[in-house]
Length: 441
Image (cartoon, rainbow, N blue to C red; front, top):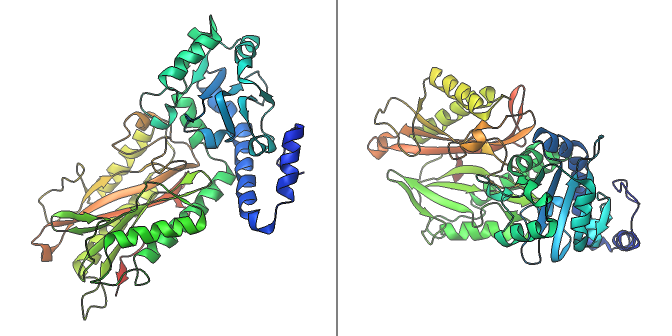
């Protein structure tokens, strides 16, 4: 029996494990991914969930699903076949371990992981809750985080009717609990995410090369579809649906993943991410299409990119754990201003050609391209108030606006974005970050 199986298996689960063990060699990639996901769930339930419940003063957490209406956390909680109604129930009964129950959900992959204590029918919910008598019951309702807001209106009415008094009146939002549970990382998670990041980097850098692009022939959408084909080949998913392959000029973005033909002299960019083992990356890459006789990008573009990298170095040194992500952001902005950069609103660069303007967008990343943990980004104001803890995954994103003489002094927006782990030393890369403008010959 595999070492990650923590509890005795029901006969059906044991059969599922035996069938998987005897699978032909061609199925071993699927088995390997399943085993890794099982390990991640076991580590999360054992080491992260107790703190997430207690830090948020929640005694029981219930995730409600029904056939055709799966919660965004379905993968994280174990998948499984959901019938008419289903409930994943986690109860803090004291001690070091959180009790786990799957009600109305089943299947060999779910049961074979061995991370649940009870498999019961959905009709057992009311008695199950009454026996434990929790004071505060977290359910997936959220004001600010869409991925923590999986409880539909009908499901909310159903769980209230099913629980009855007094437990129906004890339902509270599990928004912060879910954020803590998802964004507090284990070592296995960090390793899996780093692997996803390396695959994302490799595909993006190949896409911005002559392997894929022939100037005057290849369209932006051809590059995007080529990237999609690589995902299909490897059994991967996309963080943001169609990869954004775009051209930037003096007036900003000219075209995105369209039938626009790539020409010599174009400044190309990719913004995308890979989905692997329920992890989703977020990164950007920049390339220049050489004109006839050129051997490198124009000096003005190289200087603009170098300025972005200088800003990124300051960011990686400044973004450290803090009581709130906002405090980490304020410390980072102060360091950048001391280094001579000018902070501006998004896509609103100054008219001063002597300065490089910056927009910062370091955001949570991990289980979605835009994750649900603490964030320094201006577009996540609620999560700027969350504690930025060690081992948080962040996308280190910035836009640097630097004047380009050949563009009549207009500023080019150079985007840099790669994923990192936040430690007491600062942001540490999980794979080689972008370090140059790529060249298409």
